[in-house]
Structure formats: C-alpha cells, structure tokens
Length: 164
Image (cartoon, rainbow, N blue to C red):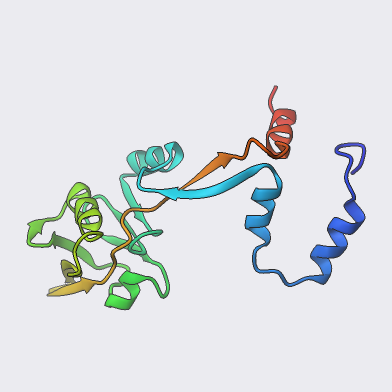
C-alpha cells in the first residue's frame, strides 16, 4: 500500500482492528481532508436523484422518504416521523391544513424552526384518515462535503487516480 500512498499503514490498520470507535466513517472523511456539514439546501446529487426518481428525501430532517404524490416509502427508525406513528405505505394528503405537495411539506418543516407547534399531517392509511403531529423544529437538513484547506486532500488524490 505504501507504493500507492506512503503512510503508516500498519498502525492505521491495527488501530481499526483493535478499536470499537463509533466515529470511523466521519473520521475517514475528516482524515481525507474534507468535512461533512449539513444545511437547508439539497446537494446536487440529492436534488437530481429526487427529481429523476420523483421522490422526496427528508430522512435527515423529519425522517421520511416519500414519493412526490405523498406516499411514504420509508421511515427512519426512532426519527420524528417514526415517533409520530407514521409508516411505509401511508399517504400524506395535507400539511398544516393545505393540500400536500413537496414544496408545502418543505415549507412547513422550515416554518417549524420558528414555531413551537408540531407539523400537522393528514394521512390516509388504506380507507382510514388520521392526523399525525410531527414534533420537529430543526429545519431541512442535507449533507455536503466541504474541503478543509488546512489539511492534505487525500480524497482528491484518490479520485484523481480514478479519472481518465
């Protein structure tokens, strides 16, 4: 491995084999000269994936992935939507009293940052319709990799070797 990139690989591997650190994926990103940050703007890959697949991925905010018609595809275990009682197969029909749309839901998530009231969803589960309250006030969250200029860019070197 030293022929590819000189490094103390024996110590690196021994530390990972002998440790049970829960932060290893984040440490890997940080040690590569980058950091993971979150903000309210979707990254380019997320935005394209959602548009092409006609999906809405809100797993890092309210803990939901759904189709653009409001059908819930996945609920993040122990997230805000899970705690509210939502599950896959249910269909959101209204958000805070307005007809469901991706924009309406995202606007409600952003508005909840400044309001103590939970987000109110009217949800159809088969023939039953029920209101669910999602107590979440953290706004939209999307991941982004940001370059740390004061550290060597190992990730860039790895990716550069993979491009023609």
